[in-house]
Length: 155
Image (cartoon, rainbow, N blue to C red; front, side, top):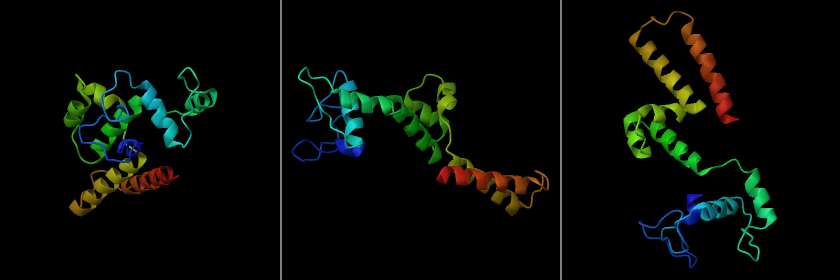
């Protein structure tokens, strides 16, 4: 979606300080809801279509109602991607501007693929060290869990 906001109406690239949910030339908006809804509609190649009163037509409102994508989802996605790429939880807390780290950890959920990768890494480390502290069957259990997580992540 952000790719849709990299260029102005004339096709020129926005300056680096342009707002993602800015006006046509990248200036700050006081209310981003209309811009957010317009961006969501453009992402699915639907309009936007405006009525004479400046409101979305019913077809646009129906498309928006079908979407399960909210502005806060972008924050959650950004935090999750930071964690998956190795950022520590304190860094994510600062980026998301959470006062308490428990707020960050409460809703940042790793993907199935991240779980799979972590289990494989731990299992590989265990094999390399020759450690059997986890027990004889734990490697098989980890492999079965990882295989199931991979299947769910891909589908």
